[in-house]
Length: 225
Image 1: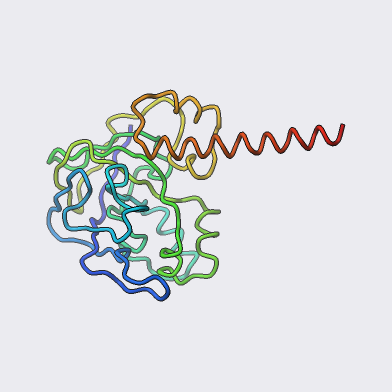
Image 2: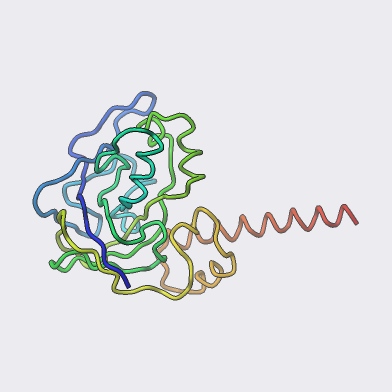
């Protein structure tokens, strides 16, 4: 089903102070050695705003090296490991296009992660990036990266393999929870009783947006007739 590699494991050692934002933990830096990962993420990491970051459904944030390289080319500058605020920079497997609920075995110390939702770009990310129209551009490109929950704790280090050990057949990718995918597939996803809370929340938002658009379209057709 696919095997990739962890290129870097990153965490926020110290907060960075951003203009108009204040202290932020977005400045992740590569760690050396093995890092402990528990239910709420890397033991060495922290989040400043737990309303939007962190928690069991957003314990770990991964970003693909392929997407980071594309952005580096567009922006004309190096984007170091951790620049996206990611905990894991991964090469060789899909991240944003992983299926929701896909399970990854990382390394050989027992760590198992499960994909949940995409990263929503925020004002903090925009200020950190320092690029014009950053949120809009990031949304349009839709290479969001993926949050993961920890199914089995363990440790992780740069160089560890990432092996896909389970891939659901519902057809909904992480990307689809923000850049709308097949609404009927997402409705089917909602029929699963064991969905993580934040996956259910994002899937419901997609369905609501779809229904609203359909309602507007029907109204427009009615006016024309």
